Length: 220
Image 1: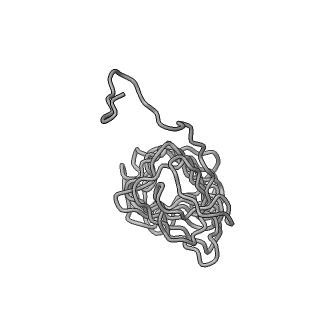
Image 2: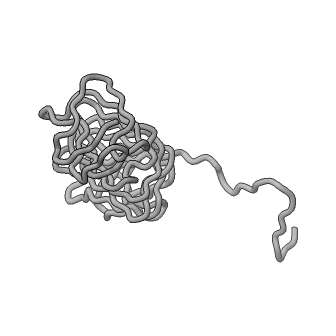
Image 3: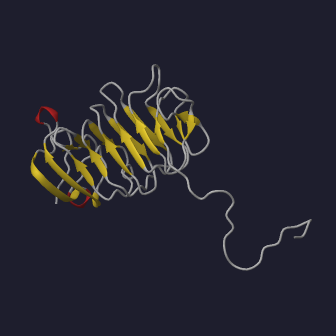
């Protein structure tokens, strides 16, 4: 080899180090700060008691009830690409995921468990996985809050709030049942949307109740 310079010729790829990354299962303790970024801020844990960890692309993340004095306000810096996002928060631990010109990307989806509400406010999400709302209330904030999700399923006893979002033909919804107290399983607490701005693709798994939360949205 040339001592002073390194020269490469031909075609192919040079790999330095292992190409295999094993995703971690991370929990948000909320005790460091509000930042969710990639390979920078060590504000995650593999369990509530472990040394703080950095998020890496493809990690699985879970938001439960944070540690004492922990925060449920999460600020995205740059596009993050988890393999999955799960919310297991109970009432009183209301999460808001925010980001300006950034969002959640990748092939993963979002699972909403626990009866506490979650607001997705990231302005440029692009994730393509499914959204499953098993419990609690999932609230959109902005037309890209749900990325390019392959489908949104809301279970009996859960609720999705469009909050002024225009789903149009982008999203497909699968629903059955009602929200707590017989309320609509899909509601709109924001700006009214008519015709093409409403829900265009809806599948019922059982009788369902929708609407009646202040603002109109059309179906069909």
